[in-house]
Image (cartoon, rainbow, N blue to C red; front, side, top):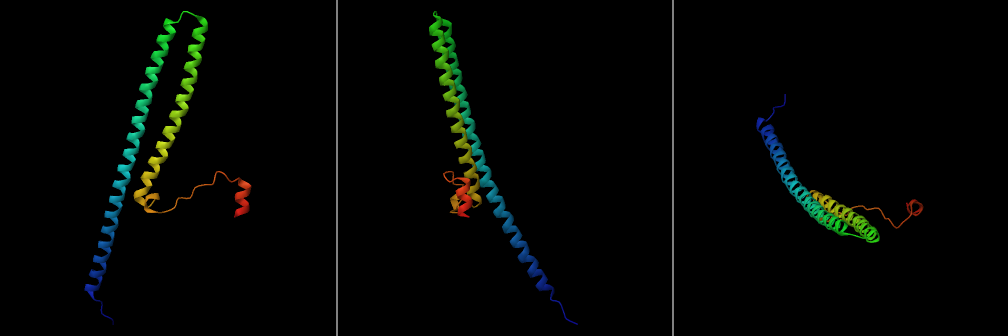
Length: 138
């Protein structure tokens, strides 16, 4: 009958325990970095929304003052037209800013976990190539 060495089992258990503890420590550090990157991104988006809202309020109040002091229907039309054009452009610009911030934040959240900052290439679709050309290439 073969004899079992109890010390060998203790050594194996100790190695496994050390490996698990190391893995848990790395996971906690990575999650901490991801959480910090996420909070930073949320903070930037929140600041942008706050700034945009303040700018919109100021513009709306300025337009309201112009409307209240307007004495000519044709001028009123131009005030409204100008407001509408600036309004639409402001919201289009803001949507682009928020989209850019959200994408940047998402990329920053993946960097600590082996994303773009660690040198890993991120697969991105080629928007210049048509679907048929992509199918022919594969």
